[in-house]
Length: 513
Image 1 (cartoon, rainbow, N blue to C red):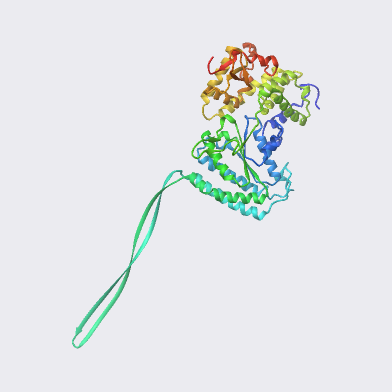
Image 2 (image 1 turned 90 degrees about the vertical axis):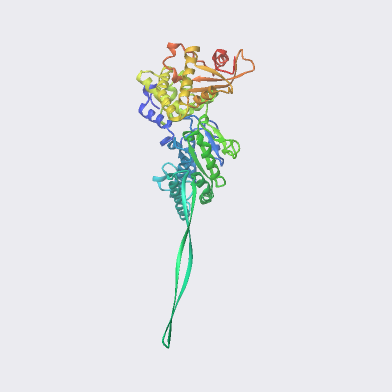
């Protein structure tokens, strides 16, 4: 272990370890610590799953871990990062995702399915658990799937709903026979001449037909062919596979049920299962209609919720400490020697229970403590780290929010005014299931990590029989201003703090007084 206190830490190594752990790719890609026991087992079961979680909650890490397990067992898999299709219109977005899915499966057929176990350049840290699959069959399936990809590229680049003129020609033949008789009589000699000739003529009957090309109809007509090939892929592998769609919320919300509907029908009965990572309140997965479109929770697909909110404060703190202890051990650092207990609680609050935010704020806090020649990371260092992390959250806010950005920013400013100016407390209340746009925007701000859920069931004095939800404004929104504004930090995880949440003055939105 390194020397005592934060000044004895190997800063470079520890900082790199924290940065790598905060990413879902690279060396830390296969490091997934379960927020709840059984999460990984559920995610790798033969069932369709919607995996909900805020940015940094571990969705991508979980999907990458599932992909690694599929690769090691030589099972078919496709991992699609949906961010690259941000803003694409339907049905082109569906065609694009389908192209990449087939390209991924073909890549597995020509790679993970047949690569020798001793080919370290391919497997890297993975360890294949089975012998290579039949190369000749994999090759034939690769050719077939490449054909699908070429067709889909042509369809993608064609105009949708285009008017197409078809011309059909029928040839009619007629035969005409003529006979010419010439007779001449000269003197006693009678002479005759007979000539018979024939001619053939062609007439063309043209039929003009107008049709409209529909891209989605073309995709529907190919489902049976696609399914046949996909079943053969699963048969080659001798086991089921996963199609992993990460960050579904990046594509237009109105298009999400359409995409999920097609993929659900396409993979049904093939042995391929959908695993979809997304943010709950920025997603739509089902809409009523005749017929209904999308996937229905509990029937077509199950949910896995990775959001470990501050409502379960002790559980969240234990999980976050497990994550950071794992990183610290790799870097040879004892966290107990460099972070005091008050700073640990403040880190949990500042992160809102999100592992990536916790690691990023910790890295900035350590740097600040070293710069200030502090012996340990304290509350002030964490406040500074949280303040610096705010710019990252703002950048992600503008990247993630395609619609309603102005309204969300306005709601956040309203909440800040209520908490920091009017009540001078970091928490506020909203009546449970309030049917208003305010309630929906608060939920979206939770998913964007600018507001945090701390208690889903609060009874308020002077509001008998009514239930409220408690939220905390993210520390990054007022760090550095607390002393100037005398903002009270309500320690809601403690008994006396929980009692303070019951005050009617904290009500930000309700049905009526």
